Image (cartoon, rainbow, N blue to C red):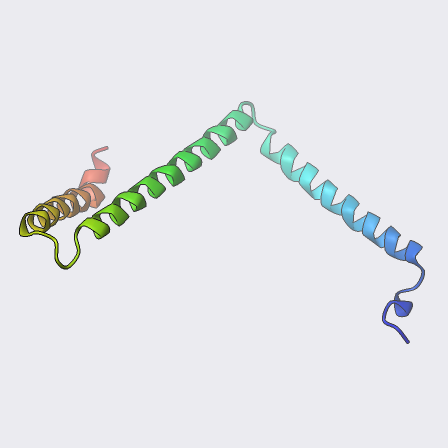
Length: 108
């Protein structure tokens, strides 16, 4: 017996499929109304989405800069390039360490 034969007539499958689609639609509708119940919540959601996109764009930009530095500072580069890269990275790490400290965050 074919596995499709055990499922029964195609109309049963269509009914089950319709039921599943209807339930999924209901879940999305309920989630959407809950999300949008508060006044201006859609604007807050859009702002959060925009902030996320901006953050992702900035992370990509940061990664691109790191890749440029990796291409410029490699074995065989000049001593001057290596010295500037080391000093810059050391300064950057110091600044970021300070900014990440609990004392700095509490003053914001």
